Amino acid sequence: MLEKDKTALLVIDMQNDNISIGGKSEKSGAVEHAQKQHVVEHISSLINAAHKNNIPVFHNQFVVKKHAAGVGINAPIFKSITKIGSVVEDSWGAATVDGIDISPEDFVLKRTRMSAFNGTQLDILLKNLGITNVIITGVWTNMAVEHTARDAADYGYNVTIVTDGTATINDEWQNVAMNYAMNNIATKMSTKEILNILGESNE
Image (cartoon, rainbow, N blue to C red; front, side, top):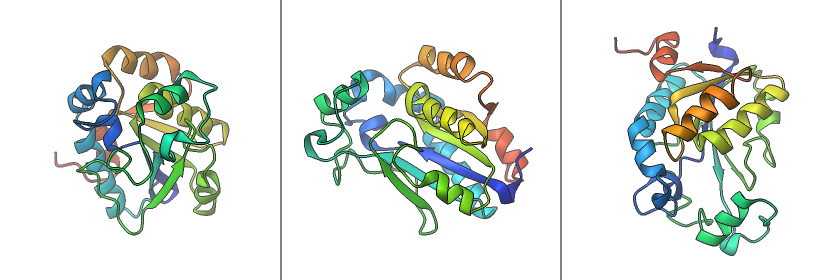
């Protein structure tokens, strides 16, 4: 059971280059899958519910310098970001997608690695806030979301993954990440189920 005063909402990589038409990843299928998942609408409703319940919201974004300076090419994912020129600092592509509002009380953390915990103050901030439960949403389910979930478990947090508040490039990758890779790592819940717990469901 999610205890409101010990829970935080993590919103990962909801940026134009990842899931907006015209973004650098559009040809990957990510835009269509995000739309199919209604990921923007679902995450927006979770953010609103979190604010109403005084649950901290963390927006964690992958942002690089021009030409991806300093990111490295040790892994294909980093090579790809460098090659396509994605999520460059201060660009439209790195900006938060329309429909996801960042409030003054929200935390915004930048990183250059897959996990939201790697190279950020996320763990320190969560612990200082007395958080023991994290609800994880965003993209990419089989990369940043999954990696963050694994790290969260290793750091000692109870992890909940929002099944329809996450997206990747297609249903196959979503299924692999959600129903294989993250088994025994996280509790899987829908947006509706979480909203019901928070007392914010319209039904």
